[in-house]
Length: 329
Image (cartoon, rainbow, N blue to C red; front, top):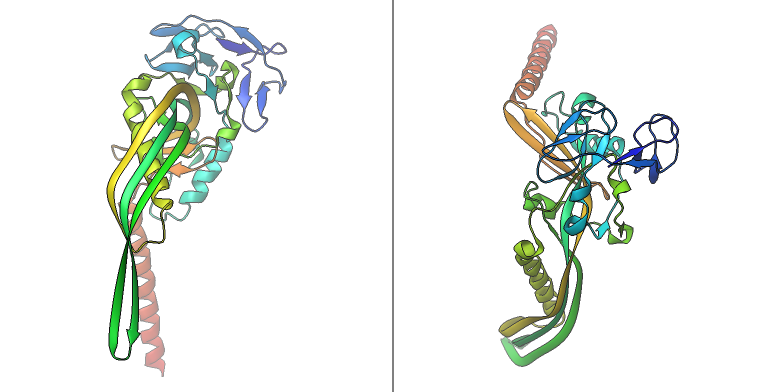
């Protein structure tokens, strides 16, 4: 599908800055007319008729000929219909600004690392996620000690008291996120969190106009072990926090039982920038809602040695001036 401006015929897109649909050609604030297109290994752009290469996991893409954004119906409908979405809150220009602010002190990064031409290549992508809810019954049995130390005269005394610890808690976990894309690195997707779910909305394909998108290629049951691991870690932490005040604690038995669970499918916004330097790719990811950045700046050895050379040249001049001054005294 494609959103066409009723006023000028341009591509209507969702604007994070305007918090709504608008036409970048005539600045019209309207949803636009929804036009359907053909999808396959090569999608047909409904605006210019060009063929758009489509990978099997792609649910939204940009036409390489007219730059219009296309959304592929069958990849956001039926079993692939997202229940929820967090629309992009940060536009491309704001993302560029955040990247420049974060890496502006990287003196030895390549000169064009944060250039306008390079940063303009970044893509806003809706990444597929599964969100898991768990209702759990948690219990803990252990042995705690409290140690009291005091002095009387020249002698030091230690008293150790031993206590039985027991805890039972019902804990509910909501929206534990696990990315469902094989194309996105799991560790990065965990680092880019958290997202603020208060801005989550019911899915509407219009939010995808102006961005790239992926459909899930890992089902909820395949990645659930990651959600369960996070849930177990958080449950164990809550149990530990409930029995503070002991000098030592020995765990005798801990049990976390899931009473009820569920999973829903949704999309989260991520900006992706890949910088290529000397045959190596440096990927950067920006949370499209909060602006959190994950990535490491490249290192330019040529820039480093040029800096060293300049520093050494300056030092040589200073030493020569000192010699002249000392010779005049």
